[in-house]
Image (tube, rainbow, N blue to C red):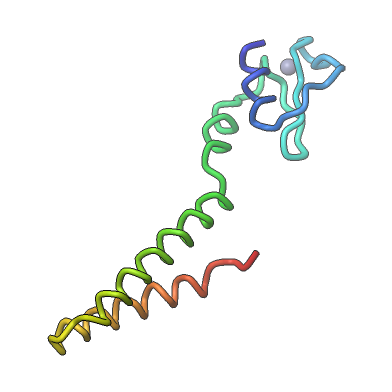
Length: 103
Ligand SMILES: [Zn+2]
């Protein structure tokens, strides 16, 4: 029951029908039906904590922030060797940003 509640808090829907095999509580999560008694739900409870979308969104934020810092540093840098490093760094951030899926 506690597990079912946890799954519901992660977006699962509790089903009215009990599991045909053992009468356990069933939940629907991302289009699949799981029995909270006999299915291994550890993968769902841990996997749903980190979603692809949230990682992409976080990565985009980090990259933008670093790109902004690198651009600012480049603007005041006098040493050509250091400028070269900064341009290379900014180029990598920029490239990765462009590879991220667009919303
Ligand atoms: Zn079951």
